[in-house]
Image (cartoon, rainbow, N blue to C red; front, side, top):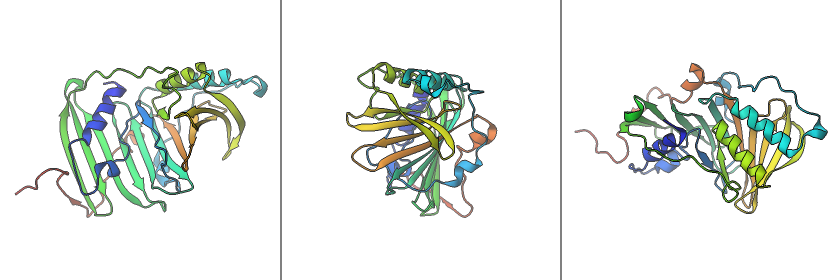
Length: 291
């Protein structure tokens, strides 16, 4: 199954259910790695959740031999970023934390991997869990089983549903100068590389600064999205892997921190939502309770 099939899976998981708490609120993003991620104009900020500490070592693109700073043109930096991304495993697990500055909405933590599924945790500004959801896929590609699990910490309830899914043939995104300068970010390594190279060829990307960020040597690449806002890629100057994105427009500034993780058993297990002891299982939204 390709990455766009997984996007279809994620979207379809919540199209047939309704609840007093909207599923869109419980699962506010639901994208899986390898599909484009839309950054809403006023997404929120907050403290970083501790979940990232459970993940294994971050993927490195190998020993880097960067050119002297004076020689690092935008084209050079983009070529190095694309090479680092293209060298990563196709089933890389991506962990992201989505915040805004100043803080307003809950923090959103996600784990995603192509062909495996995704998990999303919604946390308060103080870092307390509000809800969590996961989507996992199993079985043969022609007849996948899609399992959706949702935990609501506020009501101390959880539900799970499973259904068969026959993947369709969704065409891959074709980036061009009319759509590459949008607020769509792609967490699939190779597709992100393609997007960056297209953005460079369209003249919509520039190196705007260099310097350490939280102890990490960084290069900043900036472009425009939605015709007005500014989207900045923060790239590790040693590995050339992006580790942060910021989007500045009319609303609060969005910040997305990310880690590229190897597809180890431990990292893949992070995509499973644990069911807390004492929580009550309830029927999935839109289904009648058993007699």
